[in-house]
Image (cartoon, rainbow, N blue to C red; front, side):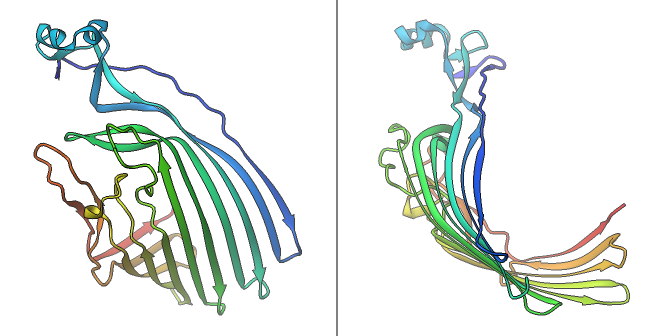
Length: 294
């Protein structure tokens, strides 16, 4: 079907979200906490699909299409909409400051449940958003920052994640129940080593960053054809900040070793869209940063 001019939709969504936290100080160096929180994302409208609102269409769609010559206008059609999504999350954590505050350790275990999670699907060549029934995830995050010397510090962060979703519309995803959520690697980590050096012009900062991202699926179907492989990315940065902190100039190299990977993929799209991986990595990027603070 086609549209004769623009069509519009109207709806209202509202929500009250909150968070409650209990904190316990075991001693001056170690603090524990437990929290429960709710979150919310408003519903919305597709811009590539719509539905006929004329009751006659439901009674005899073929006759209706013939009469209106497969054309929808603002009087008998509106964009498809999707409902709001909500999340309930629980978290237990510890925060520690050790070695005369030169070592900071943080650990958190979490669990969350989404209701009516908003997910993208393909209908033909059109990307649409629909609500999935219930999606759950649980995991563990650890990070540490160690001030090795007054000029050198090391950061290390790691995350483990396990996800599962159920209730995907059968017409959009026939065998999705029990699959992992898209873009949810089981393991990821980041390491950053930073050195600060005082000079006559200001402070020089050197940093080396290494990030690892594990394998992950890029769609709800968990298709192996477009499963995203793990990747290792190294970045280097050097920056000079003036003594009065008014300006910073730097150079950087991102993806130093030119790691090749894909960031997104799809399968089984129809029409002229191939079932292939898309959105490859940028490759190595060299650049200059200049900033001035008024």
